[in-house]
Length: 402
Ligand code: SAJ
Image (tube, rainbow, N blue to C red; front, side):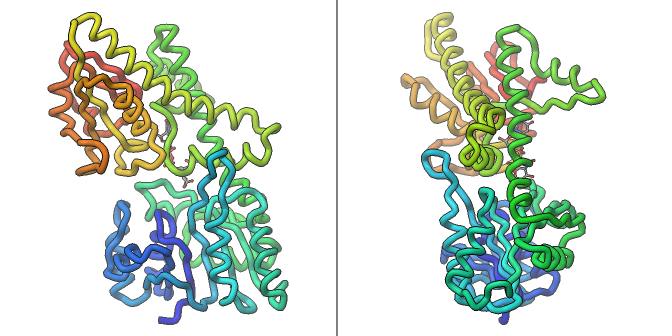
């Protein structure tokens, strides 16, 4: 197969994006360093859980439009869709973007389009532009280089990839237009052109904005706990105001985007990003606070009943109705509670996964029946229909009983 598009990175965004492009009859070569992932995809199977993705991948592979490999080959368009984690001190780590770029540099030719989709600190696209031209000076001015972040919500990726508006920022106007023309073939949402730095910042700002708003809700939950006010009722009432829309408090903020991206701004602009930095602290503190509350509830139970309680920890995923445990505050809380445990019995519940390498999972109904203390960490749909008997002590951190 001679690919028109090469995507580097076949994860939560790279794989659906590759499959979407291939489903339009464009030859796509997806590249990943993990041989197992590559083999799986070439069998028409997928390694992540995402509704509808399996069918689209299987069809694109069997039609011959989508192939996976551990190494890129020459194409006209290169999409960089690799992770950008942060290092120990919250400093962004763009080494995967750099490595992916170095992998395609020898293949580049005049007129090619190179696009970064990975969430990146401001200036990354220009940095990669410099890197490319330092190694291939003869191409200077003859490549189209742009940044275009994804904004899809895990669990609804195939729909949002097509329908969401996109922000597309080139290193120059021609690059922006070339990238817009590329996405226009696959995306129905509006395509908004800008420069690379603004597009990079836009992605970081979208997720920081959500983080700040959730921090506000979490801060209210801490105040309401002390003030003896039901925070869920309070937010519901405040949201009746036509211009107020407060989000929901929870057991912290998790996932690989919202709990990560704000640090990309804070790290580069620490003096200017006070609210963004504080929101991160508030949301992290909320998980710690939940773990302390559970500990306290267990001690109170023991004092009152003269025996150790059985505790059900309901949910491990980073948000409702998914199986993704990455950067999950619920998992962090479960870890902390188990670490502090003094041989009491705990039931760990996560209805969206069958088994876990560290935790022994218990069926959610069984856990509720057997537990003295029920702690709702994640608002999974299953939990909302449960009948909980009066004699249970319930800690509801995610609004199951609201
Ligand atoms: N959360 C709350 N309260 C709320 C909403 C969310 O505590 O009211 C928590 C969730 O439980 C979870 C965390 O926030 O722990 C993040 O969940 P999310 O549903 O807000 O977002 P993600 O991480 O699944 O996806 C986000 C989305 N960004 C925005 O909504 C601005 C998505 O559109 C991005 O594409 C994605 O990050 C990404 O890849 O950057």
